Length: 340
Ligand SMILES: [Zn+2]
Ligand SMILES: [Zn+2]
Image (tube, rainbow, N blue to C red; front, side, top):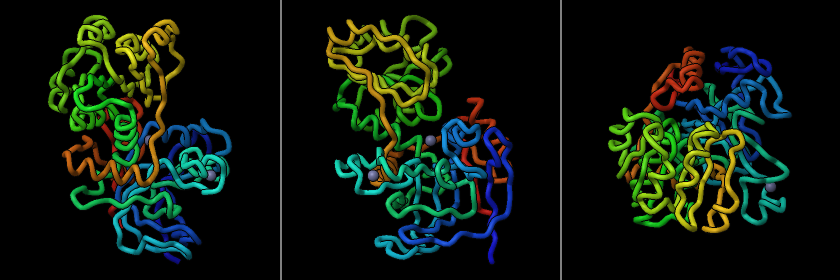
């Protein structure tokens, strides 16, 4: 029996272990992927630290997976060995529950599959994925380029294109980190008047380089007032994980504006009067499904949108994870599995 190496979390809060396992078979309805690259996402800490109920251990994290289909299980149409594919957070759906019947596959009630959380993910030389969770990866993106787009990319791209903003609207992106540096690029390429907001004057050249029309240093003054001076934002995409930073900016919404949250932060106060007097809203956004991933990847090729990545071999997973979690990575960390 052939072996593969995986990075597993042995128990909640446990250190990563690189172990050998038998290469799994692709069962009915699933494909086996020979993984080439897997991005590290902040949400991997949910698995690492056991922050969600019901995760069984040992577990292989990783939901920014890119590789090549290596074997196809019974009853799988549409995929064949040799195809370049990616897998993100959404690991599949049942197709028959109430939410699935309404097309809301992300909220499947019966078979909630999350890559690297409820099933083994991409910190591995091989992984198994449900056929409906698999996205085609276009020519024009390397595995390392495509991997972070499977979570950080799809989340920001899909949130922005469903935000209600249209060409020429003022769209602010709060935060210029792993999510934010992609969001600014997508927003600019979508034709929005894109404003980058971050702490410190030193981030301005980066924001401009990514395509921002304007930059607001949130430490230099009141960022909400700055946005209102520009007429207010149709959309503020909050990519940070800091509730105080969100609270400081929400007042920059124009009438009918939407504060769109994709960063996981604690509670923050919002004035109900501010919302109702201007028909403003605060809303969250989930990443998306495999079809959304394909749209994200195609748009990224078309517009030249790329993640800035630090690349590590699988053996240096601890260092890569630490870089990502400490916020020191510029701007995503990606593991390469190429050694086998
Ligand atoms: Zn993620
Ligand atoms: Zn379902």
